[in-house]
Image 1 (cartoon, rainbow, N blue to C red):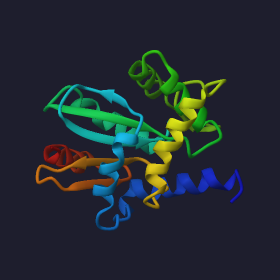
Image 2: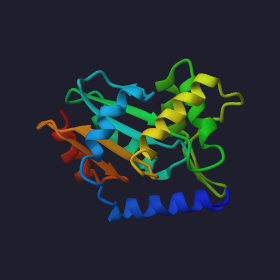
Image 3: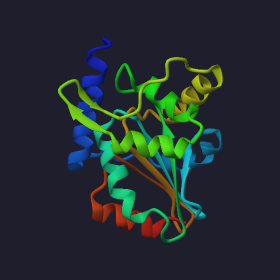
Length: 189
């Protein structure tokens, strides 16, 4: 697939997911992903023991929508959000994901990127400048994050992942509606 066609297809997939046509994951995928999350490099937001993992690309408009919809939940109901950056949608995605992970204050960098998110004529994008140099460890961390998804044949973001109160895993690919998100957050263990 050409480097120009890949971002278009990824955004098209995101649009389908955002409009409610998210594909159901095969049984066990959420549990397998949860079992591998110790390999993920993430940005923690909040200090609760109930964890929602969010795989995102800094240039993904649907990931940005998830970020916005989660704002009212920050610091509430014993929740912690673990933002797992991947660089897969555009030519600047990896550099922006690296910039987030290489920042002195990762959470502040995430907030800045999302606060300055834009929908310009050049395409949507997070408001953080791509890293000019990606450290070897950061490159490995980003590859490990991406491998978690691709190991389950998942090629779209956002992906929300949680352990339910009954102990089972649950995932949602796409940007959930506010009602879907509230239901998910009530069920996170």
